[in-house]
Length: 71
Image 1 (cartoon, rainbow, N blue to C red):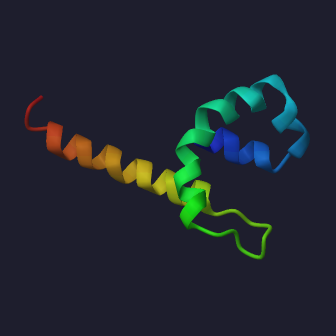
Image 2 (cartoon, rainbow, N blue to C red):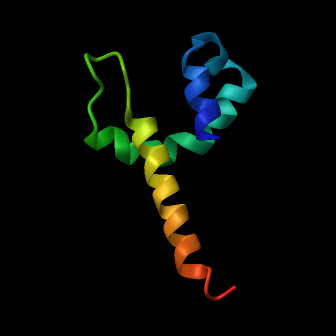
């Protein structure tokens, strides 16, 4: 979902579509804390979705590592 939302940011007209608004409602609550701490570069480039994606991957891999012996 996050990757789709990032791709939609390259095409601003699509963010106003039904799919863009649906993705925004799902992804924006997760991105909000990252945007609070990570400023955009030059006021134009927002890298917080990339950092949020890395954080999500980190947590997912950690959970897999922890739960793998149980399964």
